[in-house]
Length: 142
Image (tube, rainbow, N blue to C red):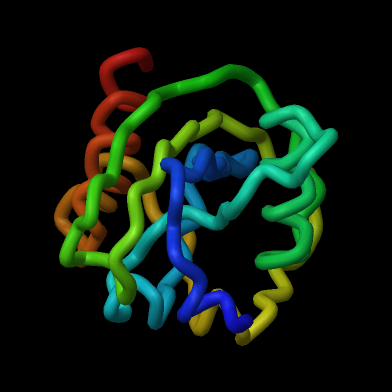
């Protein structure tokens, strides 16, 4: 059974990484699954792994970065949002992460493009509403 045709029985916990580099910029990833809006790299938590392990793995898979996870920034619920390409109920656990000094290598499957932006400027970009909330939460704590 394909991922797209799978019937969802329970909400799915997922992780996202708000990645900050040494310049104070954040990584924003453009994804076709979010109708080409900027979002955060991330994905599902696999059985047997912690949420922090999942965010490190997903970030490595999608954008090729090794990150240090600092703390949970925000939990959000996305219940059948029309911003996502399929009807799903997700619980987003978004973590503040620090990037090590290395180049971004996008996977071109989940992520089609990326940019580094200062968080304040990012709020004026084409973000999905969940990413906008996470960036806003990060700016509150600065």
